[in-house]
Image 1 (cartoon, rainbow over the protein chains, first blue to last red):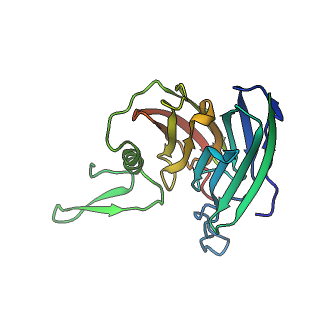
Image 2: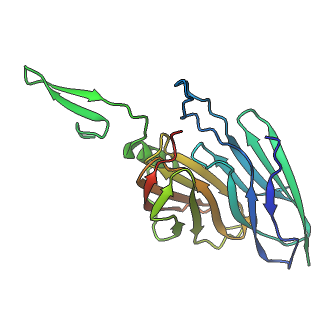
Length: 107
Length: 149
């Protein structure tokens, strides 16, 4: 999971605005239901958790199962009352955590 | 549960005995989906008309089906949607995803892309901080299922 996640977060907003956030993470999301050419099951390996916090407070969290498509995409909203930083984290079945951050100026 | 299930076949033996032969096709059944729904609702009644589900009527590719959910809620600290659960009855496992929202979400909305193994019903459930339960379902016809190689 060495890929860099892609984020779309507005860089500015007015206090009280509800902004839209889009995130895209590269991951094959191997379901565990496929078999290789020899007929052997390919083991499951997915991102199972995605969290978004703002200035340390949780805004949105997803518990993913194998039924989330490859390259997990999430769109959600956040109400911003102050300037700060959105922090994102993706955790996979091995416990590997990938993080990303994006600041926003709120006036 | 009737004797004639999707996974069952009926054979009549010489002595007029009925034998149920289970064929495990690896897929969940509507009963499995109902069990997963009951885990979320605790068997309590749900209200409909509060959730809008955006899903295609026909999904050409079951590997990536866009899903957008909106729940009618003020999303204030006293009254907000805390959890959204998505369940399908045409996948190997009925659970698809669970979203956790907070008052900081602003609106009770979430969108993603999901895999659907075949034509079936997607059920979206929501619970609020005040203990309300909402449910809505939509049928999606899937042309090519998204669970195989």
